[in-house]
Length: 111
Length: 116
Image (tube, rainbow over all chains, first blue to last red; front, side):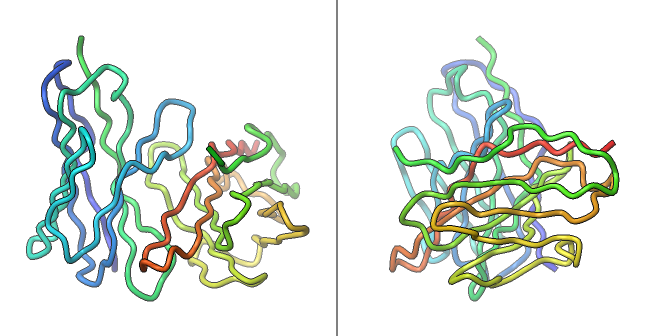
């Protein structure tokens, strides 16, 4: 069945780059998404990438997709304390509306 | 910026009671979803809804669950007879057909359901 995995924790210093990784199993994924969840808040859509792309840049965010290895990453440049949150990757597959979420990576930014 | 809203933010109920969780999706969106997140676990898909009917549901969404769009703005999730294991954060989401092939889902802040 479909499965999406992420490492649980990441700690970086303010100003450094953060790289959050995600692996998935479903080769029929069409779109892959990154969401941010701050404490007590909902899921905020950050960005997404179509499966036939290998990179997408949006201001401080860079998404890399290796479709062969089914590996997705989110790079946050110049990480700030306000970036501290849980980051979820999610996949959407052809013919379905549902998202399959990863476990979430808790990013802690140290001042 | 338009957003999805959910009420209540926290609901405490006794086992066996019925609960209704309410959501107001973004006004021009036509696709609606419920997900849940048990504490410390993944966000799990429950159901999607379009054109006044369920499009897809997961194995979690059994006969105890139902969804409804009672008017032009609300989208509700009803749990008929709550169990302890229904305790979770429930997220509502909505999306529109952008014609690009993607249905970016926008999530509400969630309702924390505690079953005692």
